[in-house]
Each structure stands twice: as structure tokens, then as C-alpha cells.
Image (cartoon, rainbow, N blue to C red; front, side, top):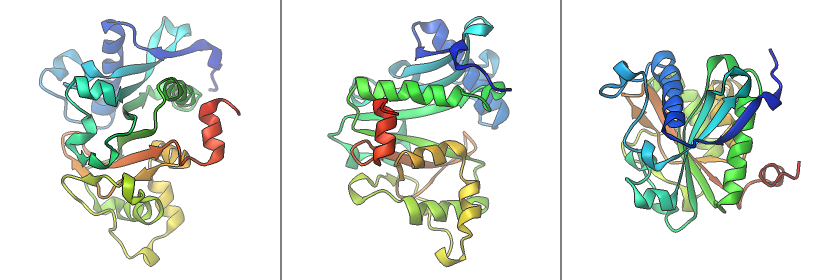
Length: 249
């Protein structure tokens, strides 16, 4: 059922209780729905969290009509925040050296509660992200994005499609630390339309914004995913999506 966008608020978490609400939502989505392996103690608390959480800003989608319930979340970490903390989460999976020296923003743990996915929720989170990007003068956005399931074989057409259509330019081409080639098939044998349908909606959204993928996939057995690193250089974005961020729609 369509929902009125005025019932929602998008903003950064203001206190520990709101961060906990985001972590509880992440547990519901990533652990209970997607089969990620919960960290030590997470099963008792029903919170999905890690050592990086204290160093992220947590962007929230709040349903004001449901007692301020957190129904969407996004983790955001700038390069200055990473330098003060434990570094970027994505550095565990990818060599990020080619991005050094830029004003960076790492995106992660994006999720929306099941009952809100067919409405405006994700669009509102993207609006909030756009505001954040402009406010902090971000030059490059990046983040690890996932295919559900930790086996490459069912994903070989989609991964090959990404390799041939969206491989990042050399100056942005971060490389997987546990390298699994994206180029899994003979390109001429790929059904491109079918391959595109197999790519998760969030990854497709990043690509529409002018995004690229890094070199190689990373299999995250704990999270039950095959990961790719998405990179978006705001200076290279096509005009209509740069307008999206600049509110010139």
C-alpha cells in the first residue's frame, strides 16, 4: 500500500537508543531474513553490530505515525571519521589505496523493514544521503554491496555483466583482497537482460547513479553473501543524477 512521505522523517541518529534501534532492524533484515551469521552475543540481544559502528553516522528512516519507529537505516563514514577510528569497513575486503587523497564517504548496512520496501522508504533514505553528500563535499562514494548467498556459480552471468559493463576506471579500480574474478563467462554467451534482472535492486540503483564496480568479488561466508565494491565519483556522474543530488529536479 502506498504511504504518504510526510509521515516519515530522515535524519542522523541522535543518541545510543536510536543507534540500537538501527542495529535491531539490521538484525531482523540481515540475520533473520538473509541468514547472516550473528556475532558473539548478537543472538541474545537481537542486534546486528560490529566494532565499526561507533565510528559511523547512522542515517535513519523514522515512521512518525508508528511512535517514531526506525524502519530504515544506512551507515555513513567519511574519511576523517575512518582516520579517527578503526578505518573503513570495506578495507577488510578491498584494497582501497587508489581512493586515497579524495574526500570519501563509505556507505553500508543499507536496509528497510519488510513492510516498507514497496513504498517511498528507500527513496527518502537516498534523499537524506544526497543532503549528506552535499553538506560534506564528498567526492567519491563507495561501499560493499551484496548478492544473497555465498556461491558464485548461480551469479556468474550477473557478475560477468558487471565486469564487462561497469568495471571502474583504472584510477578508481579497487581490488578484492580475496580475489574472485567477476569475469565468469564468455561474454557472448551472457543473456544481458536476464543478467541485469539478477542484480539486486540496490546495486542497480548505484549503477544508475553513475556507479562502477571494483576488480573482483569477495565471498563473505559469515554474512552469506558475494560482495562487490561499488564506487561513485560525483564528478563523473551523468548530469541528471548530479541534478538529483543538487535538488535541481
